[in-house]
Image (cartoon, rainbow, N blue to C red; front, side, top):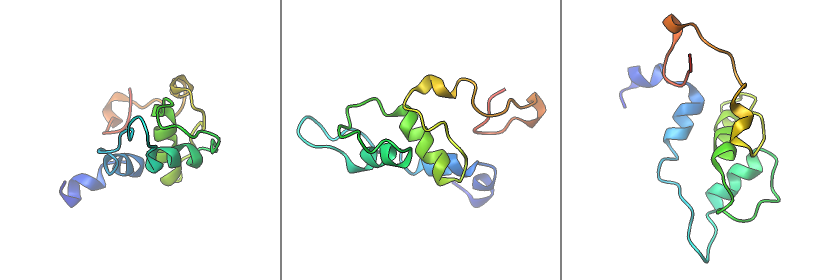
Length: 96
């Protein structure tokens, strides 16, 4: 990614791109990176990377970028999160 392109990408999304290769470790091991996502959104009680982690991942990326997340483990917690943008102002990482 070129520096100019990166300037137009929200920081939380830049953090997310760095995590592209993260996946569950398998049947007998836990991926500490995934477990850390849970810790970053105040859910250190989660000990298995098989636990659905999509909301924890988004929350962790937002928190790293100093953006307040829902800190919920439910993906639906993001349905009404954030601010709607005007179509002319849409950029990568936004919804309209």
